[in-house]
Image (cartoon, rainbow, N blue to C red):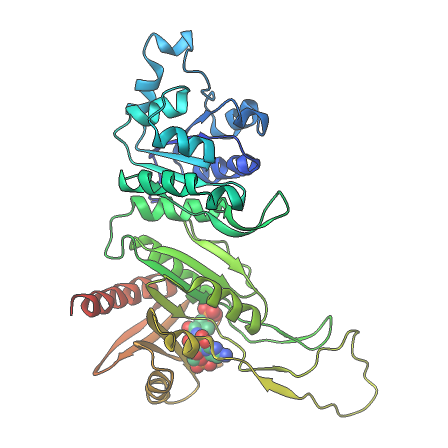
Length: 402
Ligand code: PMT
């Protein structure tokens, strides 16, 4: 069952260009079977209409502190008590200042004062405004009082500037919400995971690839979410749906996968390399389709960076788990890779035409760590992933309690 099913989420939307993203956020939350009550500030209604949010949330949007229809029953109190969690996304600099100073001058700020539910802000503003001393002070004060800040992210801004202040994407907020409500051995733990194949282009229409379908990695993403982790999934080209609550980034080449991993690995607790990453790529990529002018053709390949070894070698390396796909003696080769790449654990996977591993719905693994191993017999990849995640959780916990 989805962890958000039946959860009562009060979504506050304040004035900022990122308000348009709240429509997608509501859609994702409803898809996860959460109940969503939107509260819109006056400034927010300049960016997104109550009608749109009412249509996607399935509930009338609340806007006014002094609303005769609700105030008889003290609308702000009723909403404050109703919510399991209040999420303000986007949270403008002005709204943060109001909240920090305890203002009760609109419905959203008033119900935030009146609620006992956790309050989460997803800030969104110009980078200079985010870095302004007043906003920094307001943010610190709010955090000290127990308000959670999710984001902001850094990058291109609607105003044309670049820097911190972008609201987290709706998928990322959904993922954090799932993780926030999940009780499990990995509650609150941040997991970064790669899955699927990579494609190394030869020309605009051809590539060197492999048989990975992404099924094993996506099953792991689902199992980690089920264990309470916040999961970011870097996926090669696959045709699978994103598991609920998982934040997904699509890439194509090994180089793109490496960049995506390195951009997100800071602060992550567990890294799992399940992707079948190309070891080599063509030295040159032709601009136009290569013509068949001769009977023989040679392609010069150059080595790709090893993402798994790169992550394990970081100064603040996360707990790192690799896979080893082998067509013979999987445990022996996997153990060599575990030592060479300096990873905490490695899953030996026998692959090949007869053994499977790739593409199929079932798989078998041997999980190897320093001084131990456990065989996980052939079963469907969903159940296998759950077993693997519980073993990883156990070893991750032991490392932290050691
Ligand atoms: O996707 P499916 O169809 O469900 O199939 C699942 C699977 C067989 C792909 C999966 O279970 C698996 O074994 N994944 C690892 C495949 C692989 O590339 O193995 P390897 O032995 O070549 O690489 C060893 C490890 O180094 C892997 O963790 C790999 O992600 C990592 N690596 C490899 C090369 C590289 N340039 N960078 C890396 O990070």
